[in-house]
Image (cartoon, rainbow, N blue to C red; front, side, top):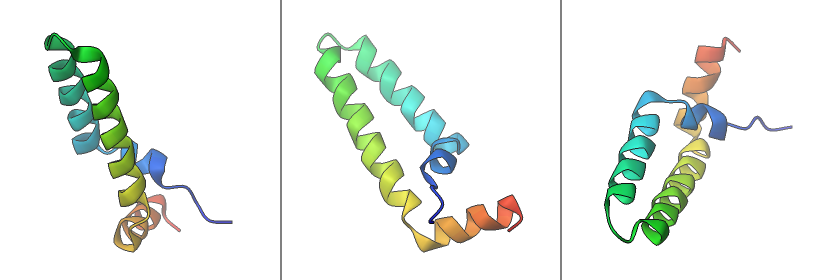
Length: 66
């Protein structure tokens, strides 16, 4: 069974920072509802795509010690 790397991608500091900045910017704008959903959807697609990258998976496996 393949390991899931989405959680590991989400926990990376630069990705958490990106989500935080996107949420803050989306909330400060007057039309924040649809923009917030768009930011979260784009971040979800990005995290899913990075988790499928073989180089990212090798990096996470080496950090886990497998």
